Length: 146
Image (tube, rainbow, N blue to C red):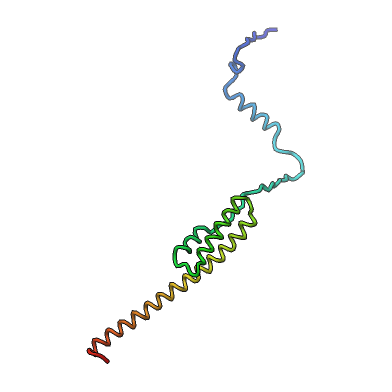
């Protein structure tokens, strides 16, 4: 029997092609194939606790505090917003949500009053401007008095 002599090399992959590992993996995948059987694939859902985001409305409260602070509603809303942020930092989510809800309600009322006051101021300005223009035109047509 004629057999070729085998040489032992220090490098095990010296005589193999470089893509040998790829071919071996492809062969294993082909041999194993897709999962066989009639059992349906099942999935498992794991509910991970996520960081609950509680809006504290600090910026909105600060805006209402600085601009047309009607009956200090903006300042009170700002105080509740800060309390909500403090409760969130401590980890009391329920307390943070309660303070945030109060701050939101106060901010909404402050915004409504601010809009009403702005519209009222504009209406009053237009009425007084019209009255002044009418008085000036009357003085031009009747100089010296009534």
